[in-house]
Amino acid sequence: MGGGIPLGPDSGYTCYLRNSILWGNVAGSSGNDIALRDSAPVLWIMRGQIEHSLVGDDSNDLFDPYERAKGHWITADPQFVAPGHWDPNGTPDKLSDDFWVDGDYHLKSQAGRWDPNSRTWVKDDVTNPCIDAGDPNSPVGEEPFPNGGRINMGAYGGTAEASKSYFGEPVCETMIAGDINGDCRVDFADLDILALHWLENGGASAIMDYPEEK
Image (tube, helix red, strand yellow):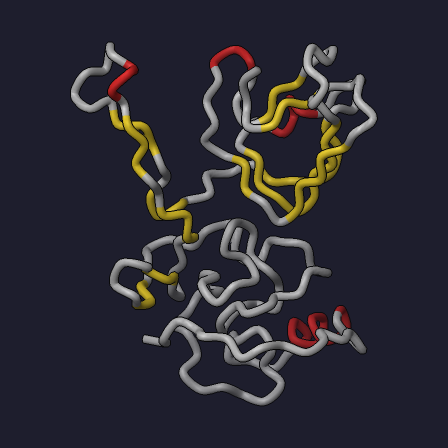
C-alpha cells in the first residue's frame, strides 16, 4: 500500500492523529507519510482527522475533494536526534541482509533534551518546531520545567523525557512564582496558560521517577 498511513474515501472509519509526528516514511509513488487512495482496495483504509501534528508530506497535497485527510498540521523537518534507518550491511543490492538501526526520537532543544545513553540533559544548537506545538487542551503531564505550558508533539510529549522549551535566551535558573512557562517573566503568556486551564482538574497523580536535572 505504501505510506505511513493509507487514507481513502470509501470507509466509515476515521483515523485520529493528534500531538503526533508522521515523518520519514518512504513508499515511492504510493505516497510517503500519507498515501491517498481514490478507492479502498483493502478494508482498513480510512479517512484521517489530523490535529496539532507534523506531517512530512506537503500539506497542500493532502487537501482534496474526497476529504480523505482533514484538519490542521505543520510540515517541517522534525529534527530528531537520530532517525531510525535500515543499514544495507555493506551490500546495497541485497535486501535480505539489511538490518534496522533504532533511532533516538527525542526532540532537539537549545534548552535541553534528555539523552537516554548518558542519562543527562544535553543542549543542542537548534530547537525543534514540535516543542510546545501540541494541542493546547492536552495536559502537559510530566514535562519538565521550562515546558511552555503546552504539550510537545511526538513520542515523548507529556512525559518526563519531553524536551524543554527555549525562549531565545539561557534557561531561567530561578523559579519565579507565577512564571508558568519558565521564560523568566510573569506576563500575559502565563495568564493565557492559566486561563486555558482554569478550574481544570488533573486528578490524582502518582509519584514519578523523573530524569535527574543537569
